[in-house]
Length: 495
Image (cartoon, rainbow, N blue to C red; front, top):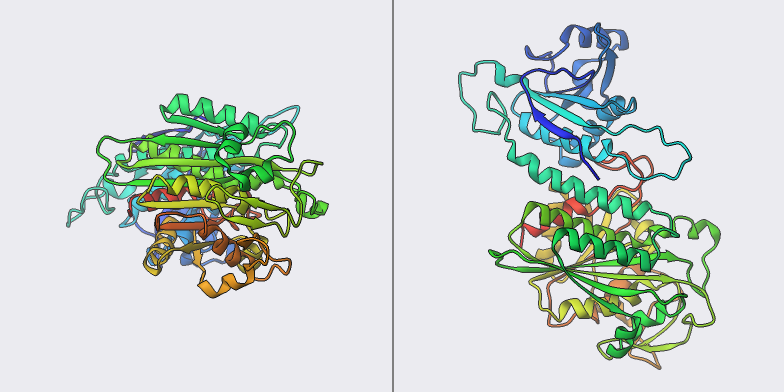
């Protein structure tokens, strides 16, 4: 979808203006609309530094709406994103066509990037199905560095704030990231009758053609021939049998490493024979969010022309109840020959991922990352503000958590010690799919999936408990927030 045009200017002309200020106890000399701000703070009995927690807005004499916020450089990325998002919401609620952003001080570049990215991901229109859609998208963003107009005795490095000009190239990468975030969110919110596995595959096929990705599909006939019984067990309950594992490839001539992205793409999850109650079946069209995250990362990496080789594997299916659907106590054989005792049909995500991880790891990537809205126990453990991550080494887990802090998409690392797997021992198969108790299911699911990762491939498993957070999360004001795209992009640069 089109993003607002960006212009770096010397003055603000927009009727809606965001003024981002560096932390201070007094108004800086270059603060836009300083007299109006002083009046607002006095009326609200607020101290100037309180803008770091509570942005304010007021109408200027010319009728423009101005919002002010303060950024504390000692705060982490997530905290800064939240302040900027709150300030932007004061302006974007009026659906302006044009937004002006003024930054200043040592944090000018960082403030501009946070604000522009926030405006892109919150100012674009995601699809709704109302008879009359009167929403208006943001069409233009203008940014000015107020400090650049004041002579500085100590010249600052380009793009680092102070009196230096803003680094325009940094916004190109952010535009690609915003496009990936919006693609992820658009796919995730589509109603299930508009994103069946067949329709999803067609959309991916068109996207691959547009982006020049290599495209390969393993449909049900091919998967049966491969003996990918874990995936087939779940998908066979749907009519028509339109499920598939879709493989997309992006190549760069200067790439020095290869990475695999794997995404759970359950377009709707009824729970199967272990049918979900209505409360828990609601929003299960979003159970394909992991695949949408992987696609968003792939799109953003392609538009940034990152010097990596990427393979994206999407496990696209539905979990339905039918005479052909898999059942408790079935024994199925996965692609790698492992036999699985079915304990609960609502643990379908790990089944479709099992065979997909095997295919992806056989290509021997330098790193494999899978994304999945996999377990309710992760949501119980973390709520909706963090997602959980598991890694094949402590160093890799620490790197994932650090990158999450830098990206503003926070991850908590969990253990997956070998002794947990005793809970999955089966008397009649190689492994149980899960347990009925459900205790530590997010850990048991990871131990299960590890059985299907071949060649000792370095592997990260991200359980997306933060894919939907009521009221928004970080930079994104919407409930469905695209968590994982920004983190995944940053991880690509860490390999």
